[in-house]
Image 1 (cartoon, rainbow, N blue to C red):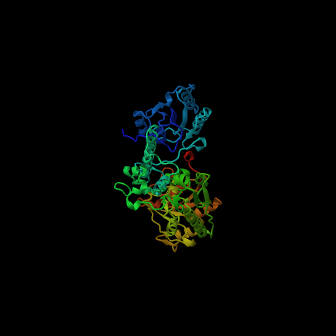
Image 2: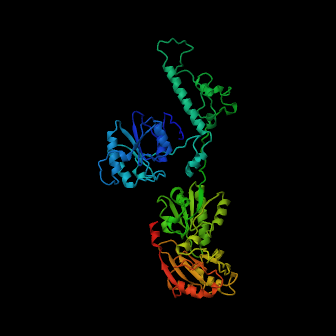
Length: 573
């Protein structure tokens, strides 16, 4: 088993009570529990560890238990007055009884298993944690509960170990803080501790002088009235980091002190101080960051882990597109400012510029800005314009991909963009060009699916481009009976799908009343390919002769069909 650093007794920045037969209970067996032990073990405290599922805790805790640094206690084996089925009060009763039977006072309780542990898969819920906290409060014991700040009566400060700690395991915020610190700070802190220990040792030697020891006039300690040489108060961190044992002795010997720092084995002459210097000078605020983030098609469960973290953990300002649904915005913590783009016909460019300017201004104030877009930001999300704009203003943004609605939207309507025997390729295009100009659409290819984003509002123009002989199209016209699905608000509870043909889709859209943006069009033989028993023979030789019949069966003899809502199982996510 891997060995871990042995805690050194002495001071702790996290806890400040005297280490005299104190007991701390750490409830949980995950890596967070191990991190809680680092400052506590330095105080020489007895640390029984209460945890679920004995034998399933992290490697560091098992090793420390084998070394006798702490005790492991299986929570499930503790006596409890509850004999029936376990509920949220069972653990609290068992812990309360255990605390009462301990020979020494319990000073702190740290609950860490409110965070999911990959090893055990157990996670304590709010009710159970609250019950334990209330019992501890009754006994006057301070508590800390991971990820539940409302239940905490004290908190731990973030810490970083130099130089052995692996900064790759730190959070992005911790990495930023670590990167801003001088690289020699670990050695400087260590040397300062040694210097302090030597100074305390020197004081003890002076106190050991006997009262009847004869001191000559030359060797007697100086009186308060004796002139004292002025010494430099502030040292740069780089100088402290290079201080050797001899150099420490020179500082404390009382003869040459700071005057002989250029002696062999001590600080080099170029580091000698003439005027007070302190390396931790005041600097302007660190420049913030800008994340360009994709929110997926709309359903919150389709957010990537990176997007979820950006919104819930890192964001200090969220600048959101208008079409991002409320279900995604509701995930943002209440203390984070959210601004919605004021985009409406004729103001798209103005609103875009307004958001970009706001992002740069906030980042220059040191904030982390999340620019939130629907789908994937690189698929018609104008992300390229924003990257170049931010770069021109001295900020390199981070692009976080999202699940593209061009791929996910059709799936929510039961349509694959590719399907063997029905569609061998697909093309994604926009229905409207820059500044409202028309776009040139691809021509008809029987084996290809066409996905048109942002085209529903211009449906008549799109249909003309696809069907007319002289349409704005690069290739052959589409047959009027080509299947098409118009998908509105894909993945949301009010999703609506109109299935029809290019000939009748305009009438179908008109029949359902007001539109529900955002909408997309999926055109081609992949649209009916998985309906009912499926139809994956459209690419076989001579299949064109049966197209009209195939479409009639798919639409059940109607000109169009409308489907409302999501499949039942999507309500479980």
